[in-house]
Length: 634
Image 1 (cartoon, one colour):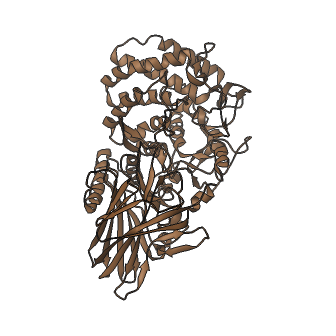
Image 2 (cartoon, rainbow, N blue to C red; image 1 turned 45 degrees about the horizontal axis):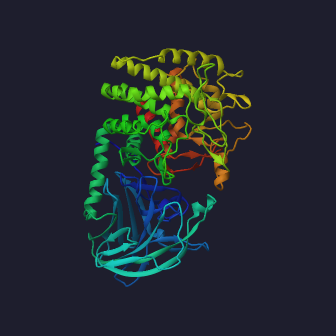
C-alpha cells in the first residue's frame, strides 16, 4: 500500500486554540460541498461546519449543519461538554477542546478522540461521494456505560454570510430528526427536539479579515443514546429525497475510495501521495461533466485555475479520462474565442486574457501525454477559432497587435491577467499592454495548435507564420536593460521592468519563447521563499509584505509581494531547462502540508518572513503544481 504522510496531532496541538485552531481539515462530497473545521474543534470561520452543500453549482454553497456538540454523562452522573465555541464577549464556552487527546487524518477521514479520565470517545466525518450527504459517527472506545447527547446546531444561509436570529428557524421534527428550513435533513437515534438561538457566536478569522465576525445559530435538538464500550451513535445530514446510506458504511467507503485513488496514481513519495488525496477534493461533478473547484472554502470553478492546475490534477493522478471530459465540456463554452473566467457570481464572466491560452496548453499536454488524436481532431477547430478571434480582436482589448504579432490586452477598470485584484473598481495590477506571460502563453498556444494539426494531418493555416512573428517580436521587445524580461511592454506608461515572477512562463512553458536560460539566480534572490515565489520583489514601489487586514487592504497586497505557491511549478521548470539544481526547494512546501490546510497547500502566504499562510487554506493550483513537481522528481 502507498505510504501517505501521516497527519496526527496529540494533545499539545489538539487542546490549543492557537495551534489547533490554526490547522484546518476538509472533507468534500465530490459536488463542491464540504465539511470543514479546525483540529481543536473551534469554528474560526463563517465557512466552518459539518454540512455545507453546493446547492446550485460549486460556487453557491449554504451552511446547514453547523456543529454536533457532544455532551457526555458519566456513570458518576457528572456531565462533560466536549464542544467548543467562542462568543462575542471573548468567552470560550464550553471548552471541550481541553479533553482532546488526538486528531488525525486517516486516509483523508478526519478523526478526533476525547478522553475524560477512563472514558474515550471518537468522532469520524466523511461524505458519501457524489451525494450531498455527510456521515458523523461517534464511537465509545472505553469507559462505558455513558449517556451521549449530540446537540445539533443548525442554520440555513449563504456560506459567505451570517444569520441573525430574528425569529424561530423553521424546523420540522419527527422521530428520526429535524428537517431544517425545508432544505436538508438530519437523522440519527434518540432525537429530542429543542429550539433556541445561540446568539453572538464569534469567528475569529473573520474578524482578522475585516468582516462581520458574529452570528446566531439555532439549537434544533439532541440525538441521545445510552452507550457502552464499542457502541456507536451515527448521524447523517443530507439533501434530497433519496434515503441516506448507513453512516458507518459511508465512512468505510470514504477510506476505500482514498486507497483506490492512491493505487491509481501509483505514487511512492508520502507527501505527493497525500497531495493526491488533496487533489481529489477539487475535482467535482458539474452540470456538464467534471469540473474543478479553485479553492475551499470560498471559491467555485474558475477556468484559469482549472487549466493551470490541469496537468497536476488529472495527468499526474491517473485521471486522464475525467480530464478529457472536462476539456470537451469547457470547449463547448468558448464564446468570442474566450473561455468564461467564472460563473460564481451567477452568470458567466468573460474577463480573463489568459484562461483560454491555458486551455490550449492543457489540450496540448493532454494529447501529448495520452496520444488521444481523436480529442485533437475534435478540439483543433475550436482552438483555430480561438486564434482567429485573438488575431481579429475580442473582448476587453484582447487582440494581436498587427505591428508585431504580440498579444495585447486591457481595458479601464479591469485586471485581465492572473494578477486580477481590484479595489473600488480599479485593477491593482492591471498590467494593460503586452504582459510577458500572456505573450509567452500565446506563442505556446500557437506552437501547440500547430503540433495538434501535425498529429492529425490537418491544415494548420498560417499558424507557423503567426508563431514565428510573435517569437521574433518577443525576442526583440521583452529583454530588460538590467537583465531578465520586462513584465509588460507597450503599457500606458511605457515598458514596465518590475521584478515579478511572470517572466518565468517564458522559460518554463514547453513551447514558449525560451530565449535563453532563465535568470533564476537573480529572480530567486528577489522572489523565492520557502512557500513559493513572491508576486513582486521587496523594495519595489508598491511592495506589500503582509497579506492581511480588511478586503481592500488584502486585495491591495494580493499581487504586490504576496507569495503564491503555484509558482513553484514554473520556477522549477525554468531551473530544469537552465540545467540548474532545485535540491531542497520544496522542503518548505513539504512541511507546509501539515501546517495549515491539512494535507493541502494554501493559496497564498505573506511576502515577509515568517511567510504565514493566507487566502484559501485549500487551493487547487497550489496543490496541482506542488504535486506535479514532487512527482516529476525535481
